[in-house]
Length: 383
Image (cartoon, rainbow, N blue to C red; front, side, top):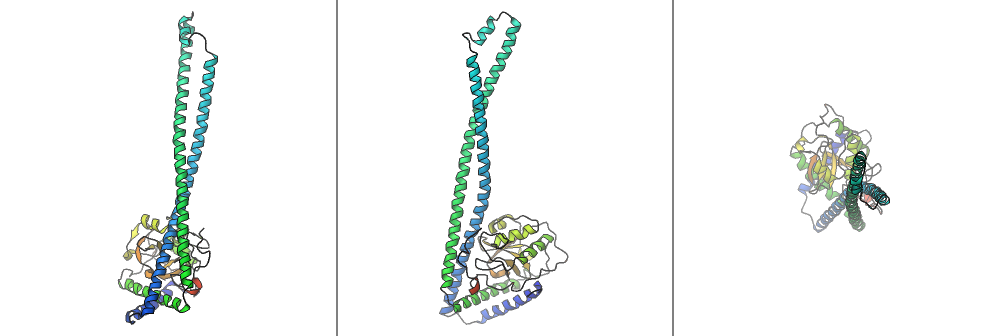
């Protein structure tokens, strides 16, 4: 609701998740229909995770392609410069050869030197001959070096082009994989009844509530925690994006994928973080949950295919999945891998007022399968 502070929303979400967890604990064993719905939920989660994995790979290939394109252009420019230098060296060698040809006589220059009647003039001619010999040697050496450099750069340029073409092929493959997975999600959702969708939604919330209750009950998140100044700014940015659609490969300003949101949020705080969730997990300093503070990045799944910003009080803000919108979710909405901190040297603020959440910040499923958020045709296209 407009103006409601994070603490109020946290209390409401915790109450709902605790109630759902209790319901799950006392419910009767699932019948055949419930088991089928459980299988559908597992299948949807697998498809979404596969699409997000492919999307992160697509993004990583795009980042590598950008770097490789710059390297290819540099190699091409160096090769062009080397070929020009080689052409100049060949011209210089040609001029020298023509000069020698035009000035040749029946007697060799050294024999002419021995027969010269004037000793001083002979010495001057000797110095000139020596200088000419050095010039010839220098021209030949430069020409040989230029040819060698041009050959090496031609090989490097060819390899750079081949790497770029391979990255283009990889990027296309990852995009096609993600699109295929999301088309499968669309077909699956289209085949479900309203009752099945409602039961999927209920089952997801029940499972999330159980995991969230266990996490909060562990005491790992106990105690008041404040973000750094950078973390507070990153959170304010992320909260302003709530309600915007997820789109894999996107980094704003109108749509985001999960790591595009976290990267741009921290960019708003003046901190550069890697583009993909895997790179964020691999390169940023890790922190245990007992030290987790608002603004830290929470990474999910064994292969680090999803990432969110910790909002505090057991909640995160994130771009959940294709078909969903940026929202606030329980920290345990997905299988937790760990957490990283973009600003390890940042000191926590003495006081912190959480950003106000817009109305509906916690609405919608994290899987994107409620009726209004099913992936639409064209939603698989990335920027």
